[in-house]
Length: 70
Image 1 (cartoon, rainbow, N blue to C red):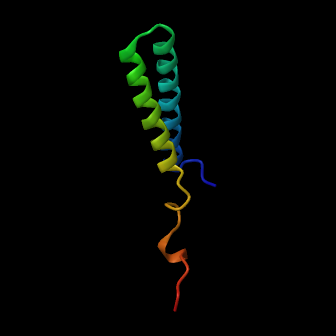
Image 2: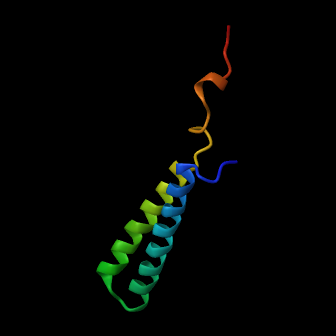
């Protein structure tokens, strides 16, 4: 496995966005800051979507390696 693949970098950025969203969501819930809570929830969703899309195993398949029915 190559360590310099761009999708790994994008997936780690997604994880950091998710962690920041988790922090802001919890902070907004504890201190009753509704704007911070809503932005944290948005960041949670965006971070999870970025992570899943970047590491999607079906997107990694190359067209020449697919099963060919001939």
